[in-house]
Amino acid sequence: MDILKLRSFVMVARLGHLTRAADRLSLTQPAVTAHIKAIEQEIGIALFDRSPGKITLTRSGEVLLGEAEHVLSVFEGFARKARQIKGEVTGSMLIATIDDADFIKLGGLLYGLRAALPLLQIKTRLVLADDVVSGVKSGLFDAGFYIGAVDHPDFAVQPLRSIAYCSVGPAAYGEQLAQAGWRAVAELPWIAGPERSHVSRLLRLLFAQQGVLPNEAVECDQLPSMLDLVRSGLGMGLVREDLALVAAEKGEVAIWPHGRIESNLSFIYRVAEEHDPAIVGMLSVLRDHWQIEGQGADPG
Image 1 (cartoon, rainbow, N blue to C red):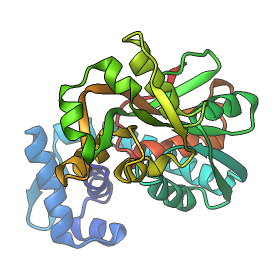
Image 2 (cartoon, one colour):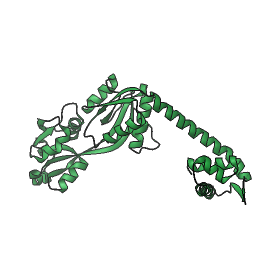
Image 3 (cartoon, one colour):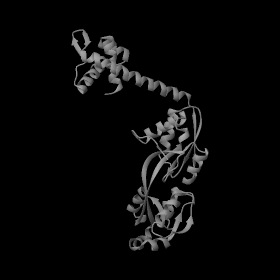
Image 4 (cartoon, rainbow, N blue to C red):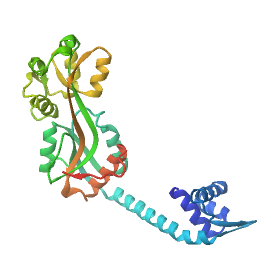
């Protein structure tokens, strides 16, 4: 049952006439009739007594009319408040981003924000993961995407998706990786991310769990290009699993089957700002864009 059908029920009940109700709703009379029948079939109750040229509420319809009017009132109040927020939210918001724009669905989010909050100026900054946390905490950023666990009372965390990374080497390493253990793989040349990046943190955690450290031969801050660097033969790298599997299927890289680590992609902001209209509007767009239903942000 949707709002449009309820609106048809209430209008017919108020006017006592299908055609006049249809005119008021800018609908056709058959459409309004179909709405009434759909409600009656869904709830299994007749709402109207019908006779030639006349339509009146049944006793059940009279009882349910008040409930329907209440639902419509709440919905219309919500819509008015949303329009009010949309028209009043001004200023600017700086969002910290990580990884590649497609993975975090940045384009769609910015498009949605622009449509929903037209007076709010949105800016983004591509930074390292640990700088997202420090920047949001200090107020440099209003919010940001983050890969990893966040456990801090000042932060609210909106989980977005799980994420896994694989240890990937050039295709020429294939036979070697198939037989290699942790120590042997750690001694191979590795392409590391910058110190404060999620790639660096996850790589060291992966090997620290086995009591060894990877041979970080090269450090590169072009994290979205990690797969390309591995393809070139430069060395091993920690690559998002979805990208690694496609490249391995094409024979471009070799995956070491033991070097897999999981994490989470989240959107974080300060708990103190959770009632700010810009944050409320932004989170609404974010959850709609990521199709997150019935799930609020968790405190850090």
